[in-house]
Image (tube, rainbow, N blue to C red; front, side, top):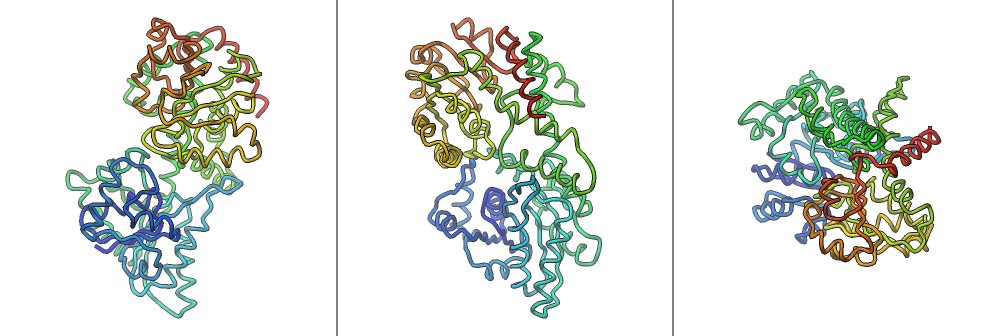
Length: 472
């Protein structure tokens, strides 16, 4: 089938490459000429395991094209995926300007029946706005072509997106029940048939329900994370081990183990903006999602939990102190720095006078740009932030190691070498990578999240509660 992907970012690239890999002729469009030049030159604008090989293989087979030519892109596809960005607006709502611009371009150039697929994460009612935008352009040029707008939200995990697309746990399709919608449903069924060979994974529903499903899924996962983080902070106070608690409640099949890990907060491109957008949608309809408001508040507080632990240990003047940081991306196997917990934590340390030496296996480039923006107002603080080419280099002269991303390379380090290079054997672990008892046996002072609380952690609990009360 002929498929067009509008937007060659994270979702668009994965979708386009994987659809080409099963034999479709895919045209990927982007208005960013530099990005298209990188892709046509054999490079990658993002880090996603396995994606570069798929793109290279399908470019050689001439099943995958990258271009800035809007007219050619619209003409190519029988099915056109809109996979552009929907960044959060100032009020937390999703900014749909790029989605609607793509829709208008389709309306200006389409010359026959088209299926337009909303792949971007969009609020309920967006398909109707996309349809209106296309209809307006068709009317302006006196054309009467039929089309149908389908909602097909993505459920890709960064770092595992290729596997998620190739072996989806579900394919959500929201189609209208009119004649164009029935035709669209049949075309989408053909497109996704290779992914349904072992069993039917497609969930058919109306368009608005499909749009709602994406936000609801991410909001549920974000809620689990914030719930566990609150329990972890309480575990520190009462002397419980949150890992034991996690195993105890995760063994209930109604709950399960996924997303029950305590840590220093969630980030990335999905959970923060989707929680905000769903809460904003509720506000617009006179409803209040108080649990989601609490989820967001807990997460913002949790991003400062390690800063409070460090202050409880060293005092609130960190001048002359140096901290080594392992991990900058919001999660492993990606270079995504959007809403990464490393950003507020490092900013807090710098603001208190510390120097920071940081390492990440793939995100250093994106982190450099992120902190240039974050610290543009504070050049003196920015000067105290450096990036190292190796994880062990950040330890030299450091008063403590701070772990912010659970990359595999950090799970089994050479602890003897680590202890030798630090000023003191002190670790603040925001991802609970190690067993506290084992770390004590190795001679480390080890501060994790919710792992058998200490007096310091109990004092911290009062500080966190005071912060939450001040923010309320």
